[in-house]
Structure formats: structure tokens, C-alpha cells
Length: 213
Image (cartoon, rainbow, N blue to C red; front, side):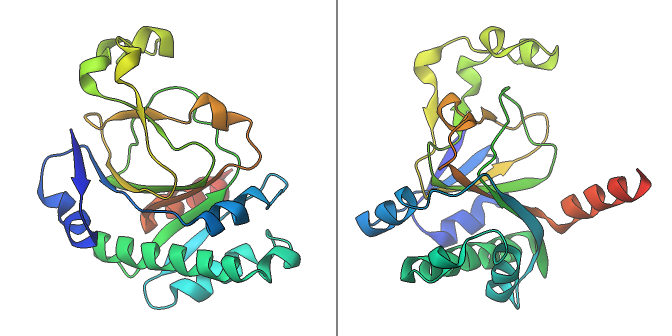
């Protein structure tokens, strides 16, 4: 069940209904498309915490060593930073938290259809093909649960859909969430760029595991 949102307010209302996914469609200017098509970044990823109060500065610090200075001087880079900052602030308010877990990168590798074992996850694809979605009526959930490959999970390929670039999508996690994955076209696409936002506890758990190991 997909909840198509008309504005940010309806996106914020998502957690009060029983839909699996909320999508806010956004129009992308041709100037931004040209900016991303010309990035030519080497594969990268960066993660950390982004706070409600200092979201823009937090994102600048997390990206300054990952994005070449030539690109950071482009006016559209600043616009991109501001866009990520606004979405992070929205997700902080959605989660009712003063900070969230932030990940930005070009290395997308979720090949198998899956659900996210987190309460909520926000995804925005800035470049490349958006996340692939498999609605329940087109999926064999038993095949998914038993660990079978995608070809067994998909019952109806014609029902598969994709998020658009720049869509703001919030997934409801847990075993009843909508099945989704990285599309084939984005698995080896160096120009693909995805932002992933989670509750702050997501990164905290990763840090604990790394400390133990």
C-alpha cells in the first residue's frame, strides 16, 4: 500500500496511517540534471549524524572530504546541500528526534528484494534510477521469507515500479514493509547517488558492533 503525498504535511502524517510507503513526488529542474550528469565522482560513501539544529553544517562536514573542491564551488552543489538539509530536518521532526543517521553514497548494493528492519527509513535518489518496488500483490512473500532468490519472489514483473529521481520516500520497516531493492541499472552505475536516513539508533548500533569487533 503506497501513500502518494501532495505536500510535506501529508508526508508527515504517514506514520498515522497503515500504508507501507509514503512518496512525495518532486519536479527536478534541467539544471540539476545537468549538474549531476557532469559530476563524474569516484565511488564514495559517507555517514554520520545530522542534527535538527545544525543540519546544513553537519552535512557540509560529512561531505567536504568526499566531494572534490571543483564540484563544491558549483552553485548547484550548495542548492543540493540545502535540499538534503531540509529533508533531514523534516525527517528529524517526523521521527521526533533531535538527530538522525545519515548516509550518502554511490555504492548501492541491495540486490535482493528485502524489507528494512527499522521503524522508518527515508530514501532519496539524486542521480541514477530510483529504488525498485515490488507490491504485495505481485510478490511471493513466502519465497522471500524462506530466503529464495528474486526470480522466485517476483510473481508479476509488470507490477514492478520505481521511485523517481528526487522523490522523497519514507518506508515503513518490519516484516510487513513493502519489498524493494536497488535496481539492476544502479548496481554498477558510478553516477548513481542515494541519500538514506534512519533513526539515530541505527548508526549507534553499527558503532557498537564495530567497537566489539
